[in-house]
Structure formats: structure tokens, C-alpha cells
Image 1 (cartoon, helix red, strand yellow):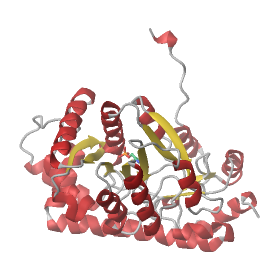
Image 2 (cartoon, helix red, strand yellow):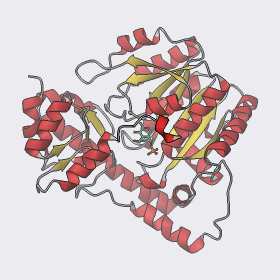
Image 3 (cartoon, protein in one colour):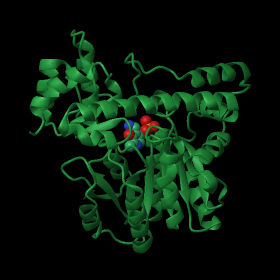
Length: 388
Ligand code: PMP
């Protein structure tokens, strides 16, 4: 059976982690892995999460099955944070999923069932897992450019590429904190994308994996609200794995917006049926933690305070990095955990060998892997490789 398979390359970032661990240099810098790090370089369990786990340990009375839609209390409380005033709409319905990845895959399977001929348009570059997720669901992919050479949006080029999109195609959008570039659309550009989708019948699929890590919970959801208000049909894949620091617990949700309540109910019934055929039910613990936090005002306030601290630290590092070299100036205006540097795979290997600086081969860095006091050493190692 298995001899017919092609050998698959291992994840390049996982190899980088192993190399970093084995590197004996005390001043090595890890900018590779995509998890938040605090000033001490740790990715600790958030205090609000620990508090919620204590409550669950004491009070959870059963581990009996929930259902394919997961923890509906979690989905409803999270919806208020994601959709604000739209949360009560009978045109929006959602389920808990195993992480943002599970949400993307479930949404992809729904699209493949509803409209197998749809092309999914993804930006270049995007999170490397986007293409496989949609491809494995059997969908056709196309890519559009959206960046200029200086770390800003080239909107005209994006519109020119999207001119080839057909009515009923899907446009995948990062709701905030673009991974890997940190380059988000302005409010005016979002308005233009919303108009484009409405006018051309494109269906936005918003990937919101970093709410609260850009400009704040509300600001980071503004583009999602704007898009949903403009179009009849939309999908939103959500991850709690970064903003609650729950990575390995795999916490996410998928919502759909339909043109009316009946169509939303129709879509929801298919989402539930698809989930049943993939994972039957999502894992409970992470979503129960998020629900426990959001149900309790004191825990919710603690979580929001911790999230504020994470965002403030990231944005302070962005400002310091941008000020450290003229070629890095655009980083101050970008948002989220990542930035993409104009560094080749070969240059990244040299920086690794000579200075113990670890970054992804595509030039992506995790800003949170820096500290104010390691920025000078990082920029010293980097600057010979930057365009003059
Ligand atoms: N979308 C984007 C843009 C991401 O960066 C990530 C995580 N790296 C995800 C989705 C998936 O998140 P999760 O770990 O919750 O599956």
C-alpha cells in the first residue's frame, strides 16, 4: 500500500527548532518559531488560563460528549468579541474547531461541498499552510500579489491580479496581523476590498488568528465587521491559540454568514455534518478554558490585561527595530508577531552560522523573539545582508 507514496519534506521550521536547541552559544537569538515570547524568552501559560484551569479542575462535573459543534457557550461568548454588535445576527452561526487550522479546513470542506468549482484566491506570500489546507479539500487555488518591494501594500497590483477572479470565487484575507509579513490593509483599502467582493460576487474567507495582538481586540476586528457588513456570504476562521496562549490545546472556531437566516441554517447543518465526518467532536479542554475566562469578569479582565501587555511589548519592539536601521523603517507601521525581511535563504543560513540568529528561510522573523537589549546584536548581524 504505502510504496506508492511520495516522500514528503519535513517542516522546515521544526528543523530550525532542533538546530537552535543544539546551538551552545549563549547569545543565540530565536526568531523562527511562531509563538509569543516574553522578555525572558518564555512562552508561559497565561495567568487567566491557569486560573480557569483551576476552576475547571474543581468544578467540571463530567467529561461526557458534547457534540460536533463543540462548546456552544464558548462559541457564543467568543462571537461577542469577534463580531461585536453583529454577534446576535441570525445570519451568523458558528462551531468550535480544533484550532484555526481546523476552522480553515472545515470552511474549505464546506466551500468544496457547496461550490466545488470555486477558486480560492490567496495572497503571495501567505501562511505556508493555507495552500495545502485548501488543496487537500480539493479546491483550486490562485494567488494574487499585494506587496511592494518596501514592505507596504501595492493595492493596484492586487486589484489587477484579482481582475481574473470569477463571481463565486473565494478571497482569503488575514483579518489582522498578517502572517508572515505584518502588512495589513488600511481602513480605506478594506473598504475597497469590501466593495470589490460585493460588486464582483467574491466570497471573503477571513482568517483571524491574532485578534488583540495588533491594535487591540476591537480595532483588530474592525476589518472583519466591515467585510461582513458589505457582503451576503462570508466565512470567518478564528484561532484562540495566540491571544490566549493555548497553542497545543488547539482552540478555534468557524463562523459562516449567509444571505439570510434560512441559508445560514442550511450552511450550519452542513458544517456540523462535515465536522462529524472529520473529527466527530473538537477537543474540549482549551475551549472550556476560554469559556471559563470569558464568563467571569475578573478572569476576563486579567486575560485582557495580559493580552494588552503582549501587544504593547510587540509594538515597542517594532518601534525599536524600525529605528535601528533605515531599511527596517516600515516595521513600525506593520502589526502582529511577524515581519518579513528582504533576506535570502542563503543569507539567513549565514546569519545562523555566524551569529546564532535563527529565522525562517523566507526571511520571516518573530518580533517577540527579540528583546530591546538584543536588537543591536540582531541588527549588526542582519545589516550586511540588507539592500543598501
Ligand atoms: N492562520 C494563520 C494566519 C496563522 O498564522 C495560524 C497559526 N500559525 C493559523 C491560522 C492556525 O492557528 P492554529 O494554531 O490555531 O491552528
